[in-house]
Length: 233
Image 1 (cartoon, rainbow, N blue to C red):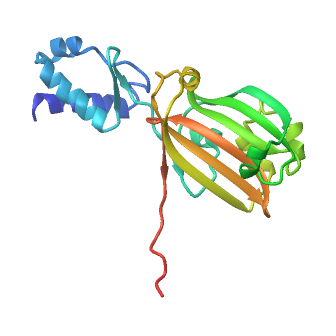
Image 2: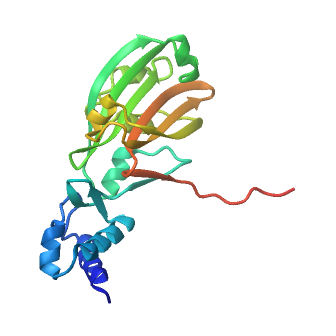
């Protein structure tokens, strides 16, 4: 076994065992060179292999950190972020940053069909105390009048809707975007950071229920679709 493979295996074992926690900083390259008695290139090859495996995140001028686990979601499902994060062993919190009831505009017709009034919500999902996703949501006051009295500080809007409001149809749109300055500040990442943007609309018998836009830093979330071939003939 080469030395860089030994270094990689040493840290892989410590990360997978939980000895090194997500977000924890690894020793500096200089410290690793001194500990293992090797050249910088050897250390760099080991850290690069850990990064390719998704175990380590390397940040320019900041060092190497244990990667936070990527959350997975099925594309054809409507996920409950709070439930998913909790199931992955992470602590979820939702901070509501904006809430207002307003008349629906012409442009809103393509987002929440038939709504005359919209409850507009903004918030930040957190995982282990750190920003995980930005959320902007519109809820039809006509389709879901109970939302006007709901306590979204106690329960995130998405979790509340899944628990209280049945739906018959949903549409998901996925795109890659760079975080604006305001979005980057809320997510605690540099402006322009590649992000996964998920937009979702739901209906109940043709009546719009909600439109939501969620923005995730690209290294924190992915979406999975599993399907088979369409029947022939």
